[in-house]
Amino acid sequence: MALARRFLPSISLLCSFEAAARHQNFTTAATELHLTQSAISRHIRALEGQLGAELFIRERQTVRLTMAGETYAREIREALKHISTATLGFRASPSGGTFNLAVLPTFGARWMAPRVPAFGALHPDITINLFTRPTPFEFAAETLDAAIHYGLPDWPGTEMDFLMHEQVVPVCSPDMAARFRFHTPADLLRAPLLHLVSRPDAWERWFHAHHVDACQIHGMLCDQFATITQAARAGAGLALLPRFLIAEELARGDLHEVAPPAPHMAEEAYYLVWPVNRARYAPLVAFRAWIRSVVSV
Image (tube, rainbow, N blue to C red; front, side, top):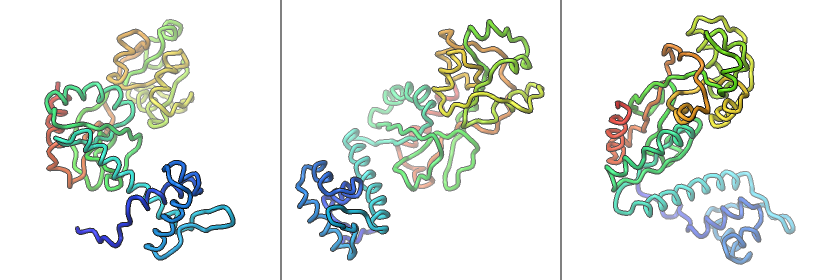
């Protein structure tokens, strides 16, 4: 679709507006952009002239955005961010393709990032850019080619490949394991339990799979995987964590597995997800083939 040039103000005007809108102060914006205050003021006036309406309400020595100006500032900020990301991606890989992949923070740090060099060795012309996203998002709103999603295979407007299930195991510090001497799944109810906010019913499901009546389970809440892992290591309680994401802690003996994993019952799994219109994108095609071979090992 051709762009109507009359609706495209210059980047210099938009950058001045974005900085002035963010700071709500022309002088501060000028300092940030290494311009004079009068230059910022002229840029804002020129942009308002193109738009046919005021962006700021000017009161004595202060300025504040109009209601329409607030909406415009938010959209312009996102547009400038997209341009910056695209430019950075091109500079990172001027001779090949870039592949923007969204990953869950812990999965990205502990599983995906260590494997990126192996993909790069096979495809030196493709640069993978990792962006952590703790929650689902709209592909249309971000410059992403694909995402690794944990959940149900239900994401409208996308296609996906199944990657793998996960096996969660109850773990604690060696000292806690020695102190409580767990022998059966029911014994775990004697110890404090740690809960991950993103999986609030994990313990209930685990006990149910082991035929243990556990209607009311209390304990400390953690909103980050790293926090709950550290809390378990420190002896604050038992944590129910994916085994493949705590392999290092288990190998070092920082965490001790205290009961058998539950029989697999979760519908959730890891999926590689991409928008339909990116299905033929060469870096994505290469990545799909590579990651399928990795998870099948």
